[in-house]
Image 1 (cartoon, rainbow, N blue to C red):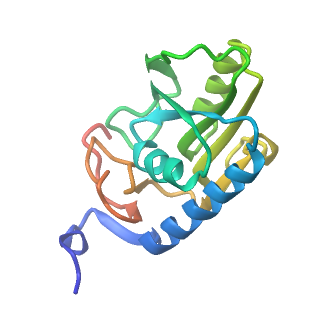
Image 2 (tube, one colour; image 1 turned 135 degrees about the horizontal axis):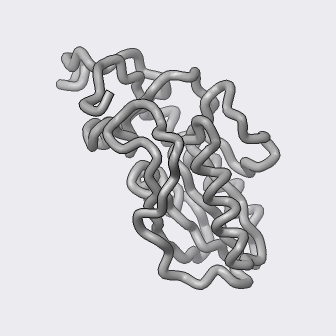
Image 3 (cartoon, rainbow, N blue to C red; image 1 turned 45 degrees about the vertical axis):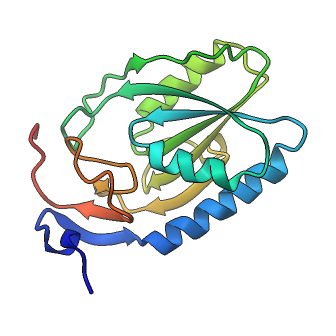
Length: 185
């Protein structure tokens, strides 16, 4: 039995099925639990795209964790980056001396991540690591800068599991290719 998503002509192939997402999130949570023993992390979720992943990941980490959220923008309603990163909502927490784990939905060009790293390192955390659910093939960010990666995916625009186009498709239970036309394109 299909879902109403299967009838949407703007959605292409399933890139990462829901069951694989949940299994990988559990694996990432176990790895983070092992790596952060004795130094509970501050999870910094990058809104809005990472909110579903952040929620599931936090429950898969068997340690006390703190949370903070920030919002950055570089896409708007388009399927291509504007090339300009701006902070829409900053953190409330003081990062000085904290073990910070940035939780990202996707690393595409690396522009946003590069900006975030510089921005957050200037606040003197004890450590700063990145956990990204998705990394696109051809990403310019050195893999050594990404401590935890869920999946490497083809260089296509994707939606679901928190990722959107013009605020749509965030509640898809899987990651799918978006083959339609975004309003801003």
